[in-house]
Length: 105
Image (cartoon, rainbow, N blue to C red; front, side):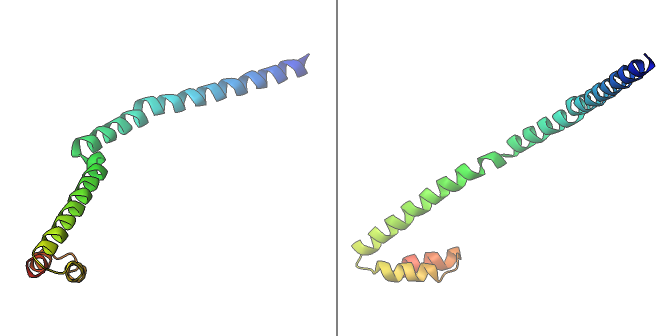
């Protein structure tokens, strides 16, 4: 009889300890982790970082449109689009040099 009492006593003691540990972890999540995650999410949304990908896509489309327009203008004025493309490639993303290329060709 003592064996069963000790066995069930240890078993219920272990279950109670597990339940208390799980409860403490749940409360830590509920009162510490969840508010921090929500604050971080709100901060990111307020800075606009979540819109960066969309703005880069828009800029990329505008750049493609402007390059196409520049090539068409170059062809109409008797310029050479290949020379323009070569000049822009060697400009190394320097805006002033790219503008100079578009004026030359």
